[in-house]
Image 1 (spheres, helix red, strand yellow):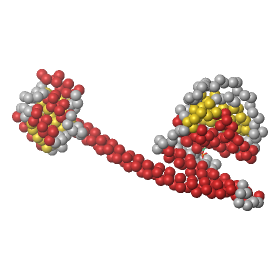
Image 2 (cartoon, helix red, strand yellow; image 1 turned 30 degrees about the horizontal axis):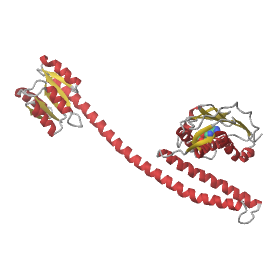
Image 3 (spheres, helix red, strand yellow; image 1 turned 90 degrees about the vertical axis):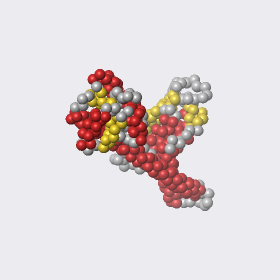
Image 4 (cartoon, protein in one colour; image 1 turned 45 degrees about the vertical axis):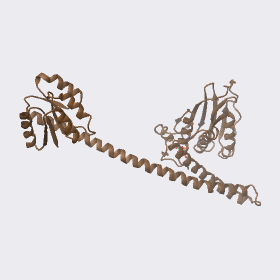
Length: 388
Ligand code: ADP
């Protein structure tokens, strides 16, 4: 530990210097303020003792000049007489650690010096740790980027051949390359369903990487929301029927237009509806509601399934946190993607649920429709349900 004493009184410098040396410190001396600043420019001192009254510049000026010099902070202690106590207090406000009044009580001074140096050590340790942490974080970010790039590439490479397999199966199923018998048809249907699941998984992974890279963007157009919801529902009619689900639609016929991304909003409806079907036991109930006012669209999907415990309702929208107890097939990627798409549309999505009784997923979205706001009619009567 090295200490610089800046004092024009040669005797005082020598006495203090000798005591500090006897206590294991390396000591250098400066007789004027400018000499003190020059020494500090040349190298870092752990501690600088500065006399408030110096022949050339004031001790306060020395303090400010030294403060501005190094990244690491020297511990600065003022030496003062009672007459110049005010300057020392000002120096404390400007960053001095403490001050000694003349004649210096050496035992007390050594305690203060030790405290100052200990504080400095802790602060230097902190800085070093922060630096190490920042470097480790940078490395992790780099690795994370590489991982994302790898996952995207692999997902892409998997998705393309899978699409070819699905299309080939479709050709067979449509009897375009010869007639298939009912048994072959069943096997092909099974293969097609599994292939479609894998394609969805690859697409979800690609979407997630896009979200993480902040690169998911929207291709917005004017969309009639009721028509979009009807379209999605039609694609699920067979599944609803197979599970003998009692399905109700409360779709406000003229719920109006929304300025949004058609494919991504379709994905939101598909994810929420397929979850409702997946997590509702046979013979259960599902209700889909869509309504809108001048400002926003509100969509709800209510099911009578297993429900979601309170502590997990926020978690299910987070990436990579699929509920551990889950027995159903799935990846836990659907809802994080839903959330991202809804939020990109400046909307909000959440779930209300009573475990054992069911869940209600809700999202609202501002219309943000560049076209005219439609005049709203009264909600249409509930349309007869598919499964009932
Ligand atoms: P996945 O269904 O592939 O697991 P999701 O992100 O779509 O992924 O859903 C995350 C989790 O949220 C599910 O694993 C499930 O625990 C829970 N969940 C989602 N929808 C429902 C629902 N309608 N009823 C009960 N639990 C649900």
